[in-house]
Image (tube, rainbow, N blue to C red; front, side):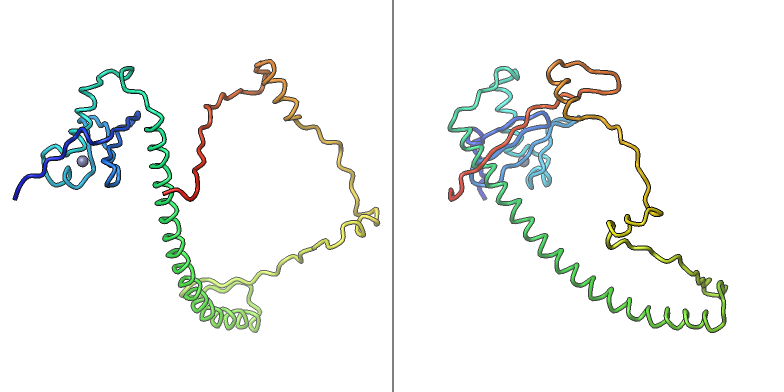
Length: 219
Ligand SMILES: [Zn+2]
């Protein structure tokens, strides 16, 4: 069998803080992580053999070519567009995974519902019989070998259906004093206008938010 050699220059490397994403446009991109013990790839080849896989080789080539962070090539518009299409592909995969998981979850939920219902009905027979037995004997607490039974009378629940009608009877009206609270809009305006951190607050600066919108109907 001939050894298959992959031209690592064909592999596209995307770098981040945690590692590198290596993709050859045909297969799924593979992540190569920076670890304490060096580069780590989770691909099939890297798991099976002690040899360096094509992904790690590609990362090494990439780092050898552009060793300093500042020297790393800037993205061309074509590359940016390609990356966005990759994001779209991954979004599709996420959606498919979610749909698949939801279907399975629905099945499991239905099974659980049916089983729970059966078990609960069986339980109810025993519970009813025990409840009746406690009442017949006028027990409030009864210790048995298997456990202890208790019967407790409960306070009635008062539900208000029409508040206005109830309020017409002064006996059941109370006056709540005027409430003092932070005027959040005024505080925000003051802080963003002046940058002043008044006593009792902390201004947390948030990083900018990146977003993307994909063209639908594309490949
Ligand atoms: Zn690999």
